[in-house]
Amino acid sequence: MSGRALGGVVIASGFLKTEMWSMLETGPQYKRVAQLIKKRILHGDYSIKTIPSERQLARELDVNFMTVRRGLQLLVEDGLIERRRGRMRVKNDGAGSRRIVRIALLVPILVSSRVDELRVAAETAAESRGVSVRTVIYVHWDDPVLLDAVQGFDGACFGLPSILQFPVNCGQVVLDHLASLGRSRIACFNTQPEDTPVLERIDLWRYWMAAHGLRGKLYNRPVKSGQVTSTAALRYMKEILDEGLDADAVFCITAAAAVGVLRALADFRRKVGPEFPVAAFSGEGIAELLNPTLTCLRSPDIDPYLNYCLDWMLAGDEPWEGPLVMAPSEIPLSVGESTSGC
Image: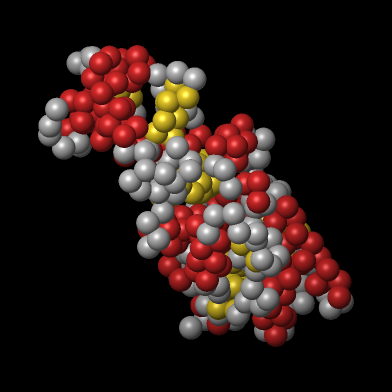
């Protein structure tokens, strides 16, 4: 086996192959091939791409061509796959010894504790129903993997029910809270890429300030997609503090931006709390971990929505009942130390 080190990761020919076989049960090679392919099917690996040809699998697994064929035949007899036009494909009709249900979970390529929480919630709800979840990562909204996922998973023709966890209008309670502390120059701070939810939150701040006859400055320096918003927020907030912050409170569009803001204020020895309140639209799973803890909207329980969606998916061809966008009508405020001081 040859290999080289790259950034602490060993890249070696034959390494993945050895690891792959070591994770399977012992037994005849053709049964181990069947076990490996079955595992991939259950994880939804062949929902987006097709099953490789027998010769491709033989090269990948470093086994005999006939060994692969015998292994695949076991899965044909089990009803998991079928041969069509000379190629193997996963059966989608639920026939065979077990019904295989696979759900695609599309997530962006970014570091987000909230995305991780949503992923765990979806996987937990799915596991309780014997459903496999396949996480699909996309880089941008025009990423071909999005179309591949929609085409590879056959439920998209019924529409795409959506769970909107934080409706933008619910953010008014955060601004109401800052105003209740006697603040009249509430700045809006953002370093998140300007997608639709971010722009809607900025507009909410504008409309709310205008409706209450208050003035505030927008500090907006969005990073490129994939860059770390909290680090950018730290640098940006330090620049603002050097030049002079025109605000008596800060409303952060995201919790990631608030992380940088709080760190910068601490570095400048600015006391955060009733003296200078900082709040964010949402906590993204980290609000209670910060010091000071962050005032923001409390994360609503989305389990009922997830359960409803999964039950509909498992029902088969039943039409969707209700609006395609599900969202809580109101979300309570979680008051943290960043505005209360205790």
